Length: 111
DNA sequence: TGCTTGACCGACG
DNA sequence: ACGTCGGCCAAGC
Image (cartoon, rainbow, N blue to C red; front, side, top):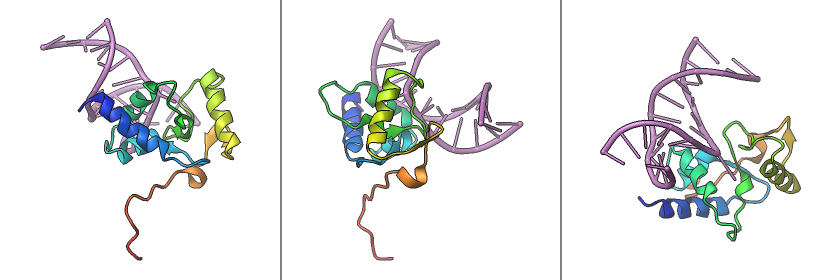
């Protein structure tokens, strides 16, 4: 499968993450149809064109942290963007219980 | 063709 | 709460 196609599928998923919520690399990959391949998400993120407006900062790692060097430009930008959306960091970490995106792919069949 | 490199992850010690 | 390891697989050299 071509990487351009992979990237587009991943980007489409990232574009669906709502404001004030976060998703992990693995979660995004799985949602795009690539389970257990979080690196596909990392790869797609590296290849995001500047003109494409994508909430890349809503993708965080499975430890609840930003995958950037703390203090780096990217780290500060991502953190500032998330905090502006109401996401709270506790010791550089985000609480999944509160902020994880829970996509509903299929319609709920009663319960 | 082969080997190394990732904005990663989960299990295990 | 660490560090290590194996799994993952497209890119790039």
